[in-house]
Structure formats: C-alpha cells, structure tokens
Image (cartoon, rainbow, N blue to C red; front, side, top):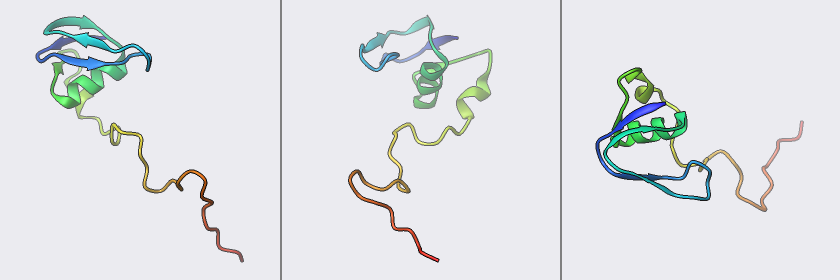
Length: 77
C-alpha cells in the first residue's frame, strides 16, 4: 500500500526492527498505513476512509481480560 508521509515517524513492521519513515512516498503494509494515517503522519489518496475505520485502540490493553495469573470469577448455577 502506497502512502504519502507528511511527518517523520517510526514503525516496526515485524515487531523486531524499527523503521524510520521520512516525508515522501513509501510502500508499506496495511497495518503501517492505518497506524500512520490515524496518527496524522501520512495520507493515502486511494482510500481516504481507510484512516477513519474504527479498529479499536492501537494499544493492546483490554479492560475485560483478567490480569495474568488471576482467574476470572464465574457464577455457578
């Protein structure tokens, strides 16, 4: 997916190596494009609504998930 970067940003496409994207055109993954668009780092002319899709929060925290090592309470019937 081709994006137009308007502000330098960093993204890790594989979760290990961090890539710095400078202003200009770049070929990136859909995940990178959505991240850059939602954060205001890039635009994508072909599908402007792509950045308006609500994918939930970018962080992976969840209030409904029990904390590690804790069991969720179940009601017994």
